[in-house]
Image 1: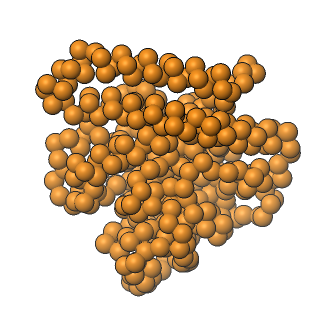
Image 2: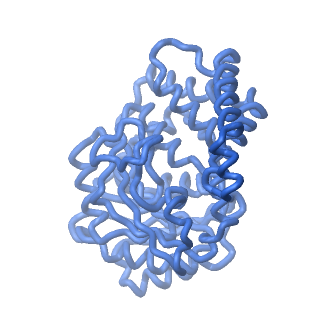
Length: 356
């Protein structure tokens, strides 16, 4: 495994980010601790058509080029492809994934670096995001802000903010996420195969790769940590604040539900249960069917129809579509279990080479 110096590689993967990238770079250039911590910026253009790379290079020079800005291109649409390129080019032991609309607080580098240096068990580290807006956000935004990676990160299935430190079951947003490079190397050594491609610009809003990375890190034996001291502003353009975009974002998560459930099941299974078998998947689907039927036949659903309670209706319909996806992709989901269980077996049985 390659030897990596102590430091941070900021990974920026962008698709047509020319209108957002300048402020993102300006915030990176203002990082405290930059004189004592080694760092760099890896910039990957993911099939852009708006000259983003040239604009970024010129603006970084105007900022004084505090560290190298190394640019690469990934013509295949899909964030996962671009992130893979960025990871492969990183020079330091820690990376931080920065979207082109993320504005990091000036102490982000220092806080993240110190936490990772102090605890070698941390594989993934994330913080809290606040929203900043091109236009006044609509009234509905606060109810859906988690879809946009805005607001407090919450405990699974609860409205309780995550505590600082180790988070047992939660997954973190990719925006501003630190990753120990050992995780990436060990995923490669274990022949990890992602079940996701990542969002493809504005054409495909299906996601889940951030959650997958948290689960995969746990399969390797690392911990996922949260720090409320890590702060960034997530810039929301006007085009993302429409009901049409919101709904696409909301229903885009349907496709990820089965894949992420596979990871949760494999991580939580210590009883020898044959996960992914036809019998167990059938039981899961029957349970989901009963739950969906109860919701759609409930008084609450009827009242939501009469009162125009869009959030309640969307939640019910999301469950219905998820059930449909499980039924339609029954055999494929069985294959997901095989893939993830095989990876878990490889990394648990085979010694993994350490970084020098």
